[in-house]
Length: 258
Ligand SMILES: Cc1cc2nc3c(=O)[nH]c(=O)nc-3n(C[C@H](O)[C@H](O)[C@H](O)COP(=O)(O)O)c2cc1C
Image 1 (cartoon, rainbow, N blue to C red):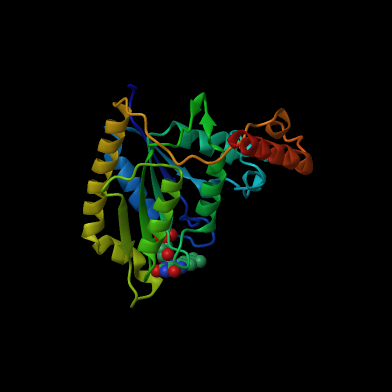
Image 2 (cartoon, rainbow, N blue to C red):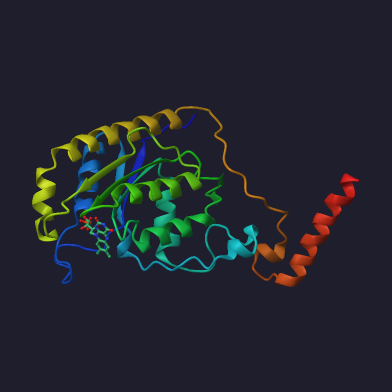
């Protein structure tokens, strides 16, 4: 059983901000995320992380060559995702993702972040630090695709063995009949979205509380790993040699079976 204040972070994945000289407008999903974290402030430690503040390097897929090549900290990059964003994720009890809809899906920066999370099989001495984190999302769209985006975000969370509470999706759709210039007006008229956010943060908070104060050992999907060699760990490995070693390993299992 752990003690201490529950930590719930918000990860905002949009690219537009008031005064940025480009879109020149604060984003709706970020506004809603700020509202959600504001409601949680009295009960939990909260933090809003704008991933667009950080250059996000793409996952180099070491994992695809061998699972054992991929570990935290990711040694492909010395970047703020490694030093700032992943540690915040590792130490949070719950994460609320805020996202616009890009062509019926999440924006590339959020997808890139989910890929970079693959290295977190251990964090500050905790094995499988992502298991049983609580995940939820707030998604906005103009005409369609918010639910598909939300499903995709929560699907990524489930890949990492997060726990998803009942009220885990809040979405706001602006209008399919009016220009995006009216989207702020549409958000102001959406009384349901604020009600749904209140329900979501209660569920996220309660679920974090339940998990933090229980001794349950949660399960997780186990990826096949064969024993890591020092060469793999330190990325001095030679693919062909290691592959031969793997075949020998498999051969040994077959021999033992007979
Ligand atoms: C590249 C791009 C793709 C988009 N694709 C969709 C879409 O598939 N469906 C939709 O309803 N809105 C789409 N939109 C509109 C945004 O999802 C919508 O305006 C959203 O509310 C913006 O989020 P924000 O206010 O948090 O920045 C797209 C916008 C951009 C810039």
